[in-house]
Image (tube, rainbow, N blue to C red; front, side, top):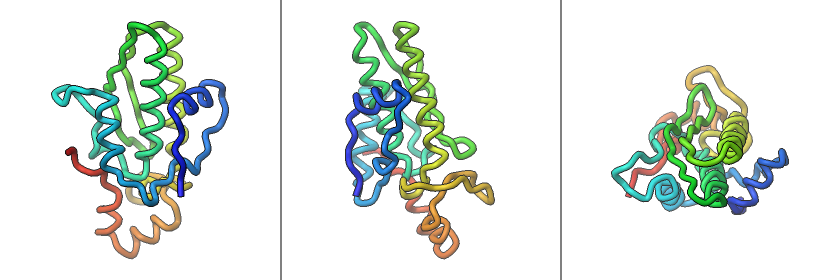
Length: 170
């Protein structure tokens, strides 16, 4: 079972160079739909504006993504007149790639960059299927996977593919 971590805790830890408990990334027993919908609302309350690209992120990274986006939004909210727009959110070469357009001070921009860099670095050790510790696999899809995920991919590719997808928008 995993535990929730508040955005300000993530931001404070990351910005201070302290680790975030990797156990918090696991998705066992998590209903992905409300988390994905909440990330959409944080990124853009207007459904007509760009939101995160669900089809480009493996399901196992949803808690990591939620922590990073929530921490960036929390940090931006600490500065009056600031604004964030998520420009890119995808998996590329086994890493979570986040790019925000930041309106605010240089300090805010640096802090958002620090948080997104943390998420990118952390993602290479997080299983794209289960959110548990994983190692980067380069044999087919370049993605970090746990041994359990590798076994599922080898034994039941259809189930592996199904579990790796984020839920559709509601």
